[in-house]
Image (cartoon, rainbow, N blue to C red):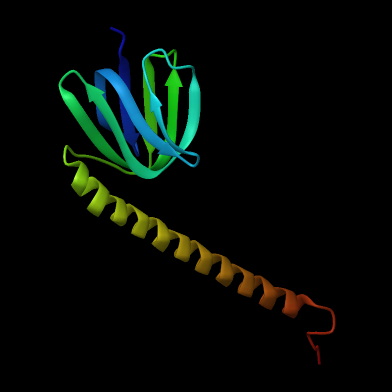
Length: 138
């Protein structure tokens, strides 16, 4: 029987490195999908979610905070993500970890929005100052 080799990395650390994977399930913007040995080469961006895989020993899971998944030569699956937590407890991953990931993403989104607003305000002030006739020289 043919199998896959799975590697999940997060910020340079290897979180999961396992072989003998017989099937894998993940989620991208179009929805859930599966990967089996012999899968065509594939590249996609992942949503926040749980990647699950099955070996002869049973099922395993890893919560990922988005990322990129690639399948090469129908034998290798690599996932690079901002953050990953492997746990055998699927319920905990789905109920706790995914909510934490989503909260962090929302906080980062708000911080980026506020940063852009401050930059725009600064540019408006600079432009107002540089506008002809706005500065009086006496």
